[in-house]
Length: 497
Image 1 (cartoon, rainbow, N blue to C red):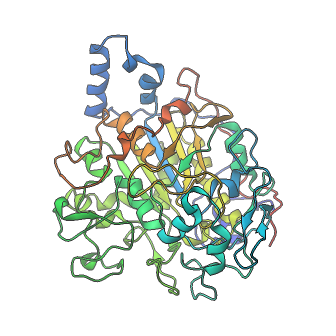
Image 2 (spheres, rainbow, N blue to C red; image 1 turned 90 degrees about the vertical axis):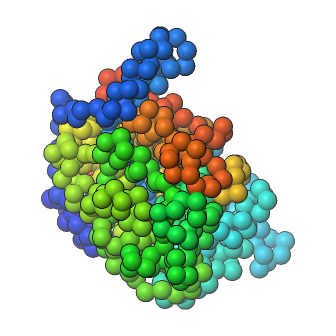
């Protein structure tokens, strides 16, 4: 269905998104000559060190030098889709294998083959940490149907990670180019990553914690990183309550170091943008039912964890957590921060049973806003989905530590310097976003307890894992900035229902 004329906000509201996503035009003008903010001290020192090192060695590689053409990194995180469920038939990608069939435990000796599913609203399957282990099944990748069958139905909140969110099992269903044409267009015009793994084999909270800090833990004391212990399940508050509460005074202590602390110390600007609406999922993956919870930039949650970090509070940076309208305004003015994270509301998240079309329209509006911004020619957009949502994927995740990796999810790079139609086969996870930001803005400093001044017992410095790829390979910094590729938020599709 084509969107109505006018703002993207009107289109999204009309199509059940129920939230304003800003007023954006759709003209195909190319804006040149963006304003250029002053480089932070770490970037200047990094450049000086490169010059001092001479013109030989790995430090002089074009990719390493060209990374500083990127002055704005935007990480857009959607919800609950596997790579095979969105890009399993994309030409050249490591997609759905021929003749694969997933065992059906309710019908011994039979199996279910992947099939084209044009439904706009999907069910998916349970996706807590035990479900990840069962789906992977020691590398056999054949537990998806069984886990969906065991998922609880008739849940009060059908986004609960313990539930199977429809009467019919659809975890082996997959979408085609005609269902999600904008996502496929970005993949064809820019970069598709076919080995992007969620950083931890678990649900939404640890994925979002890894996104901003490279770790997921429970801490017993505020302002004491040494009190933190590895944990990928719902954290307990310092007073022992097991739930992830919205009340910041009674919320969990996130005492370990997150990326915003390093950015703040180096005078690198950042923002975390939250769509006003309802939260995408239940706060506790063990809960069968839960009422919808309202969210905005001032409500700490699974999808907005930064207000609970001691570093954010101590640095007086809670004002950097803002509503989405501020993102659109910054893009329009050419005033985007160096680092942005953008998280959706439930209606725009693509989390089953939310509509695929609404999520794609929302993401398209974000990309269009950046492409029409004076900041476009110095920006990299990294688009991904936080976990697999119970949907089938055939690739066994590598094991890098006790936490993961988890299952494979889609990953896209959209930038004027992105390679055209490139499929990145490197092994990646959300840790690669941290690594890219650290290399671009912090001179390669890592979230390393041995060097960041706040020792914590995290099991792995994820950015330094040998298997982790380098996102600079997705760019050609020798090419002139490419013009925008503006898309209609609601293109004609084959989605039904």
